[in-house]
Image (cartoon, rainbow, N blue to C red; front, side):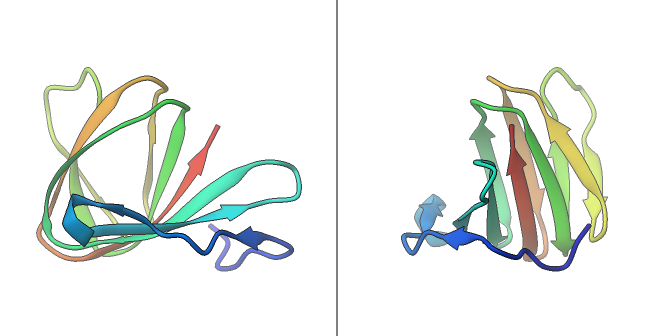
Length: 104
């Protein structure tokens, strides 16, 4: 995982979910790809995907129920997981989480 991005555009408007408990900013790259950098407060969440996603945990940890899985998995800082397109996944956070999500 790189600790920085260069030559990018950052959209000023925040993506706000769950009454402000999950907030992210969109980062656009010259090649047309995009990522979001975000922060989640403790809680239980469910998200849906359109495109495939790679979620990198930068700080904190979360329990994740991936699509078609029956068991929860724990992901900590320095780890990542993939979410297939057109699916839903659930999260449980006991601690705040800083994350980066890549799309496509």
